[in-house]
Length: 68
Image (cartoon, rainbow, N blue to C red; front, side, top):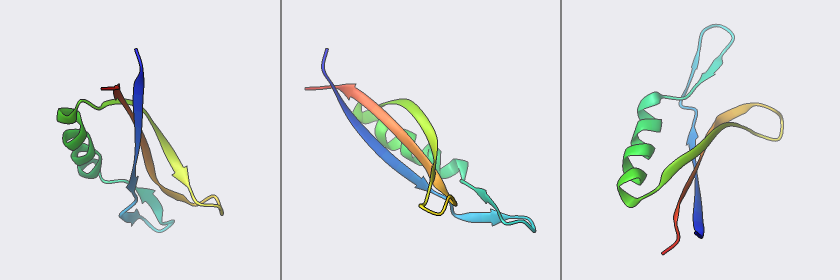
């Protein structure tokens, strides 16, 4: 079976606490999953993404589905 792949970056929207810890809104992740699932996309992996300075930028979602 052949696959096609898609990535989607869910960006950090807020910082928490005095140290400014990064936080991705779960509602943003849910929105991506609920948008792509009905189109046949299956979540394969989720990894934290960083900018070139090492600062977290969000979560990169990796999807696959059978190629038409």
